[in-house]
Image (cartoon, rainbow, N blue to C red):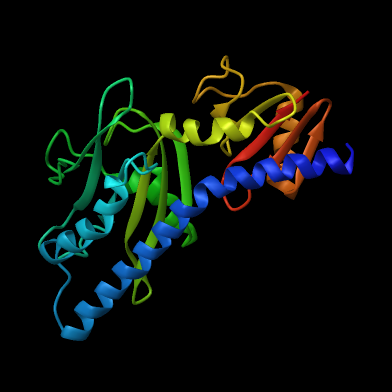
Length: 261
């Protein structure tokens, strides 16, 4: 592979990473703000409560959800069980109102209805979900997806979450949901600049977006050359090549750009 080709591939991967940079910055800002709220509770000698945190989180989340044409389709705070004095289990999440197949904005925001009673048949333990488990284990920001979000939207979604810490423990996560249909609209113009077929995949090799319409979101990108190139990227970073396939990590995300001649 010539230096010119490698540089072109890396520029495209960097542009894809740039699509996520505002989302990462937003989540990091929210994490700092909620951590400050917990410090404020401690300084006042009061227990943290959902009644106090929810209006605060609503004010943080609503502008991103109300922005016309914005990527963010869901956002909020999910508490570690037992942290909030008035809500043993608590998922405070807001959703952008979106039309059906055209995915147009309705211009309004609603609170997600949740089931917080562990005794209910509809209750789901969110601690078992990737967007919770990975930040809890690593202490760092994580990108989950694409996956069908049965908890919120029943649609293919990418979720960015970051742990909120207080006094040495994780007290919850803040996060953002992005419908893959919206993400595709941001990524496809970049992929059209790729030489040949360009596909963005997650860490498991599942398709996020592609300039090949036959590659459907959520399907596994197969082929020995593809898997070898992705393995090199996962194990060594940088660029992985195998046969006519190249894979490039998309910066500080869990995604890789796969390019095929």
